[in-house]
Image (cartoon, rainbow, N blue to C red; front, side, top):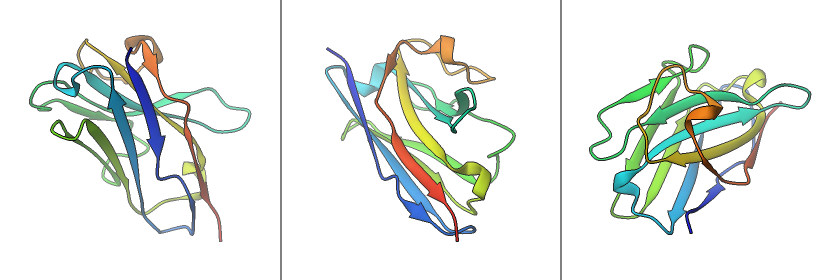
Length: 126
């Protein structure tokens, strides 16, 4: 059974950086597109980024994180990463990774992904 486990969430000051990890088990990562989503209290879950399966040649970002966040994958380790730089208070949220055998499309939408992790908390505050 496909399982995803996020890690790396933490408290960070504005302007700081964090790297989130998503560990995938039960399926070869090479055949999956992976998305990152976030949900702040009282707000809907929103797509942050996704990366396609196979060679990861397709990546997409939400406008709000473009140029600050970078998604990457290590198929040998079955891991996907989200490097987050220049963090802002509005980036604070629970971050989720999600997987699907389909492709990474823009915009990054919840409906494109069938398998979900349980999330990791990112807090941005001074």
